Image (spheres, one colour):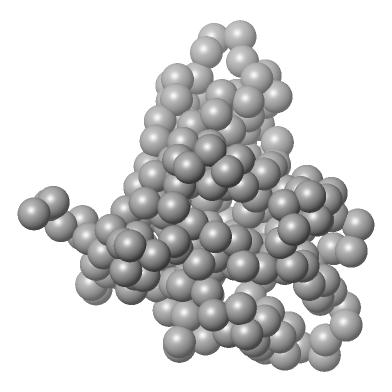
Length: 213
């Protein structure tokens, strides 16, 4: 499930929009806070601003629009073929808004971050400020982010880690989003470090993390 610790983790990043998650990972890599290499960025949107982050970092990009394919299966296969070509260890979803089917050779190799504490405020249609508005409407006292392995359901799959943030009395969706995103910027790199360590195991739909030797 992991690359050797002596080698940088080889990543594909899937995006649909601003690419803030991609930008964060590229910054962590440049600062030597994450031993990884983004080998390819795949966007479902030719106008995604995140492509600019990839171009500045001299990362190869591919645009694959869902409407160009007859089926989800064909769309998914095109995405994962590009990931195979780049010889990646893991596929990182960074604000990728299209549903894909995970092929057997990428099982437990695709991860996503959701801006809430799964199973709260997740599933189809829960993205962006909609998530934070739903958290506030629920009167929850805390929110946060969840890094999980991706399966064939929206915001589903074994949870790798979660980080919490408080919900303040005067929060707006925008304020809560900013607080959660700050947690995401630390949680995603932390999850990738765990994967690189080889300590992560997925069995019967649950994640276990072995103690350090």
